[in-house]
Length: 222
Ligand SMILES: [Zn+2]
Image (cartoon, rainbow, N blue to C red; front, side):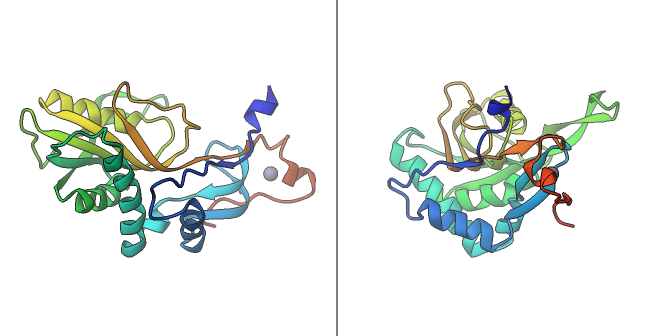
């Protein structure tokens, strides 16, 4: 069982037709502090030798532009997005910068959905949040690409897809920088494109090899 949990940190190399190689993408993540190497205790309390914070790479507009352009071109080249794209929509906050660059490449408008207070409570008893279109509207029949920085379970992307559909729009595809799901996340028949797939290697504190060799985990960013 642990063999599955302790999956190796893996990066899939998919360089075909891209104007940035996976090696260059990884270098950009490392150079900008988006991908940290060390001994970390994550929010889940699990330990890992790597930590990924996408916002750190998106701090640099020219790098963000290059990364988003690469995955957008791959999506366009696939022919799966269809001909007419009216806009790009992202879940706030992380997705906005990616959506902006994807929209630049597609030469369409870019909008975002924001968190608002929902009706129920979450698992911890706090009021839950849902995504809503607060300052933009989607016209019936418009086709959108949904853009996001990182997807782990895909909940916010799915909510964004649902918003577009509820407004009478259509979703042409999903464009991501990083898929952390190990290829597990899918959005039905909607084509999905990611610049990179990264699955973190994690351990419980008791099983962590770095703890076993006397190391002490730190919290990312501290
Ligand atoms: Zn540890």
